[in-house]
Structure formats: structure tokens, C-alpha cells
Length: 77
Image (cartoon, rainbow, N blue to C red; front, side, top):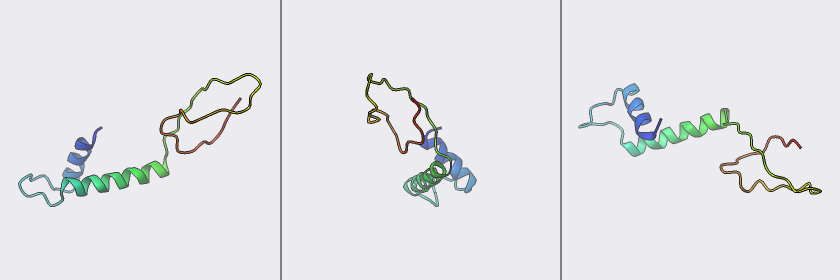
């Protein structure tokens, strides 16, 4: 779902569907949607698994190439 679809759903829930007289601006709704998304992400973060190539004899591994990394929970080798 993209932001426009989410905004449409929020407007429906708020009964703010008259485009000639919106009570809330798109920017206001977008800001609140963003805050809600941050709250959901903190409560139930997206978990992902990645496999990285290692160098024989080394115990160092760069995670710099992992896009969107917020926290590292575990490493298995």
C-alpha cells in the first residue's frame, strides 16, 4: 500500500471525504501516518536475515552494505 492509498483509508475512517472541504490537509495526515508507522515499527520491527561472504581466518565482518539496518540482534557463524 502506498501513501495515497493509506491517506484515502484514513480520510474514510475520519469521515473526511469531501474533497472540496477537507478538514485535514494531506500534509497533516501524512505527518500522522508517518508517526503511526514509526510507532508500529518500534513495537513490531521488520526482521530480516542476510548471508554475507566471509574471509578465511578473519573474524571481522562489515555490515555496512546491509540497507536499512537499524539493529543487529544475532550473528551466527
